[in-house]
Image 1 (cartoon, rainbow, N blue to C red):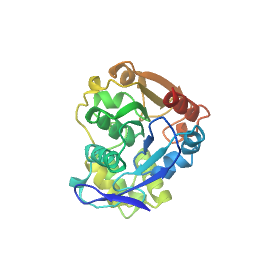
Image 2: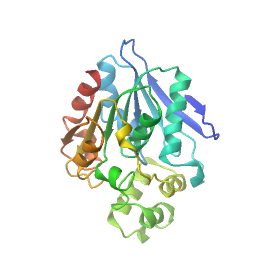
Image 3: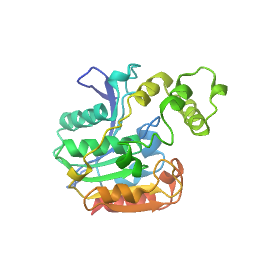
Length: 254
């Protein structure tokens, strides 16, 4: 099992699929509640990238998957997660990388790209106008006290908001640590992101029925030169749309 300690002491898990390649490795960052296997292995993204000869790295964000799960909100937030990505690039000696993020991972990837010049190409999925309008995941759809209650309560029957109930069910399905995830929800990024600073080729990928990725053209227009591609599906099913993986891999392999 491959792990490292972040600068603030949280253990971070990562997985590598090796391949001899002249192209930079691809680093994949998953969404909220998920982990590297849920978002990237099961939908076939890792298999498609390795079949194309790419070296692939998937990180489990703090509070998720096989990484450490502190319950203090001060140890969370997408900015800290971006720091973990940068630390992993340093650890592996990566000098150039293609970066892919979905949902929460998309915010992490945007923040990483702004901070680190090693990013060659960027793909952000599962996000839309909320990045521009609220500075991160669209908390107008789900967030705040509704989500925090759904994650913290011991009695799921008290969760009356349908979107929050869906997140609670997802946590239960993957066996997530509710209090660690609540800590991240309490620290979610909600400040302006200087998207105009992103100068690398960027692809915005969004499901046409994804309530967390509405009006993705607003996000694409805010990133200089970004391309937009939509696929059928909502926040969960878009990853399994027939053209999601081919669109992602074609973009990265150009």
